[in-house]
Length: 294
Length: 277
Image (cartoon, rainbow over all chains, first blue to last red; front, side):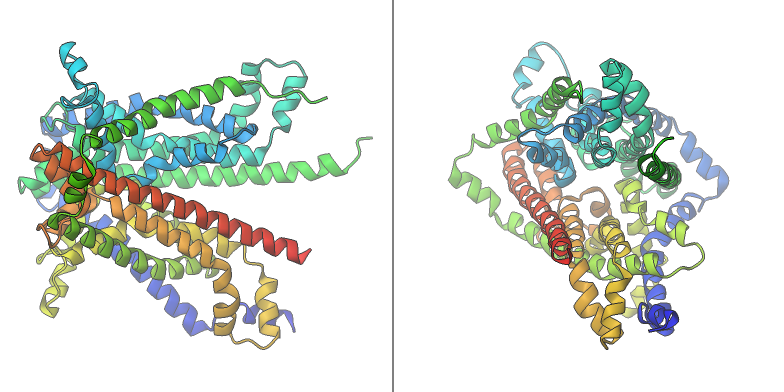
């Protein structure tokens, strides 16, 4: 078979290609593009001033601040856990490894509502530690600490899930070389491992951040819903929307939609960076291995 | 001589302590709390009229949404991998929007779009089709939430199809449809099923995007996570816990199913490589 005929055999007729493209893009238009456009169109439905008024409301501002605060507290923990877990899982063999990986996936499988409830049952007034916490006047649930803990739970898999396959693919030759040349454990980590995984790490942090800032169900269960105090931006959107203040709700929502767009752009950028580095590594390797040094 | 890498004890120890505090301890709290119920009470709550209706709504809507996503997701993944068109990169990154957009934002936006006065609802109203505040609205929200799963699990698999396979089928006289049906589809089917299951399991637990568009009528358009919330709001912690146990059990079952499917997909692949050698 000629080259052109083979290529033709490997694809669909032109009309079918066009039809499938139209169906696929039409589906994405209705389910992705229209909602995205609607957020901003609704936010600006009352004009620029009404939009700014919604944004400048003290409750909105305090919700923004709380959302950022929670993310800033949670992300370093995610990074530490992600790096530790993926180091153990990717570079060593031990029993129960697949169970550990399944356990890390758990927050993705559990309903956010159940995740919130679980912490309510531990730290709530009728919960396991409830009486003790009450005696010592420590408030976790319906207050900031509970919201931070729940967000930690919801977001801990993200960094680990990016790093495990990356570290597995990179193998352990470079680290072993560093150690045999006399590097200490931390020297090896900061000079060899960290530079190798930095883009994957950043990728995981971007995803974890989007989830931390956007989480609704789980945080809603343990938040006290006190305006200006324990309302994150997503919770604030709900309250304002239920008060039939559509412009205010969509003004706050537009901030979150913007965050989503920034997340997607950053994600695409990091993906491109990762592809580039993988390509460079692959281009580097064969000559090193095949050509004998003279 | 190669030396063992350092840090195994430290990293695994930290991981285990972290997971114990954040996952095992809270889950044991759930088991502890539900042990206050005897089996009969638990059964009564878990199979109450409202609970059964909520399972029906949750399962029905999630299945339908996952099926819609499997069908259109296959087309979208195929188009994105195989057909070059202007703006493909942009469309490709947009597919992850449901992962990045907070669910509350998705919820109020879809409710607005599909309400009688919304861009889409306005077009559907003359046709007698009501989406917002009906079970159909739940399907729309869950379709949005699950959209990336099928596309993202299929894309790498479609990229990995070797052209020789299709060429061979064509050379042997298969029509394009036969090639797809008999050669390509069996190869991508495990991934399709994995994506379907992932979308389904995400949909079962989804809360934020659904509650705004569902109407939340008990027995008709009330999903199980919402029933848990309303039990909590009535200070019925025990009832909420019982339902949470049911949902947790379903989540575990689905997690195992996904792991099994991925194992199946991986092993098929290895099997193929072994026979080709």
